[in-house]
View 1 (cartoon, rainbow, N blue to C red):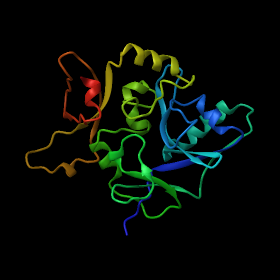
View 2 (cartoon, rainbow, N blue to C red; view 1 turned 180 degrees about the vertical axis):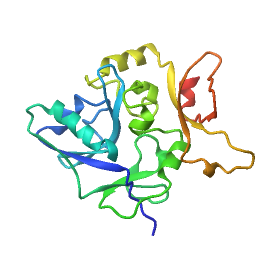
View 3 (cartoon, helix red, strand yellow; view 1 turned 120 degrees about the vertical axis):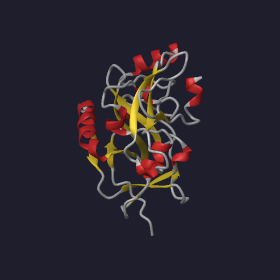
Length: 239
């Protein structure tokens, strides 16, 4: 039986008093209602520091984040916690699972075509997740989103349901809201297919696919190498 565990993901559990209210004032999406949602924790300038999916577990919240960033994200959340009676700790008994063929879980909140996710004890490692995600033009994690180099809306957060423009304030909200109001997202993060030799199969270069932040121009996009993946979900933003 094929495994479904995303071994590059970790879970951080937030428990204690009003954890939803705590995150509501920090992250880009609305956590006051239906979960899971995809969200970001930004710099005050609106640049992407961390991205994650937030799940509810009764009164607790679980943050589904990249494993390599889990310690840094926990420290950042602890810094914002101040004296609130909230516990922030990595969850060891559950793992993040993914499948494109099974009916378990819920659709990925970014894009249904990404497949379904659920939380359960770990099993065998899933295969094919990164290739599937990149083929759909979806980026995640600090290495791909730029680790503080790119603004959240430049990371296609609005198109992938990663930001609420109707909720209250959060870190980086002012610049993010201004960009949206002025329609001033002049750059976009793209997945770029590497050039291949004639007859070379696509799987030969995954996962060594490139990423590029391209400036949007009246006459289109210009890349110095490769071919950008422009999925259907991104096309309205480029019109």
